[in-house]
Amino acid sequence: MSIEVIKPGALTTLQDLGRRGFQHLGVPVNGAMDERSHRLANALVGNAANEGTLEITLMGPALRFTSSAVIAVTGADLDAKLNGEPLTPNTATAVSAGSELAFGKRRSGVRAYLAVRGGFHATPAMGSTSLFARGGYGGLGGKPLAKGSVIELETADVSLPLDRLLAALSEDVLANSNAEINADAPIRVIAGREWGRFDAASQQAFVQQPFRVTPQSDRMGFRLEGPKLELAQDAQMESEALGFGAIQVPADGNPIVLMADRQTTGGYPKIAQVCAVDLPRLAQKMPGESIAFSMIGLADAQRLLLSQQRTFAAWEG
Image (cartoon, rainbow, N blue to C red; front, side, top):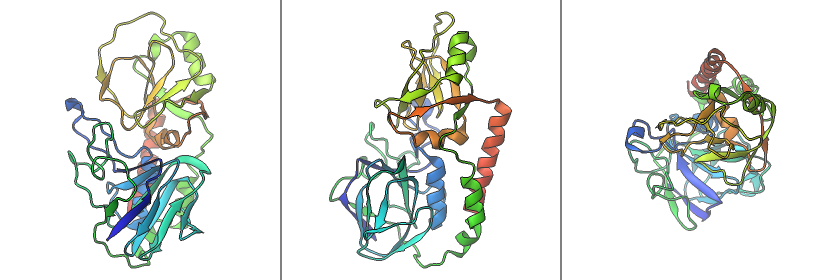
């Protein structure tokens, strides 16, 4: 069972939920930028949440299946077509041997996720199959997809229907979970450790004025342009561990939101932390798009996280 890569796309990489427990050794976590779409794709085809999916960025690949399979595509709408016909997103689809899956013009979002029942055959690096391109490890041979390569698949039962999934992923469950997403709503954050060190004008601007995602943004971090954020007074800081969604402000006053391939430590002041529930929405933002931030309390952020976990549990049964 395998997939032939006819075209690799702009950046197509294998990602799971990341390699955890190694940050103290300087090893980034990596993993899917949009955990929500990654987990939904896996749930739709009956995989465990941590099974690898192909994270497809902006311009998707063209793939040929050498054997029958069950697939699902979630996340960004990149005009997926199966044998030239539109592929229904967010659903499990049976694919016959010789079928071709291709992606066209972007319609919305940035990152789509492709899951195949049984998963992709890949050797874990430090407990994860996620690619870390800068480090050259993980994924499928330590690199993004390349033209002419062959992706081996794990053996899996590809029969339909998916009885357990039809129960867990009913239309009501999907409708209710999708209602939680509003792509245009502000990105919710909680105050960062150094929030109080920023002057009042910067605090006000951060939550009242929009920022633009710059072209220098990638899986490591989103660089933003907007009102300059300044400390009330200069301060020397020691480096400390960094999490997904931490918003650092370097000396130029332009914030950086740290993403999946972030460095493990840093010493810039952190004005805020993106709530985990909104990281998937942030991951789907294009360079050039504007985002706004909305400050909420820690208790509200925890409540939203628990709600998201209940959604994941409903999907994964």
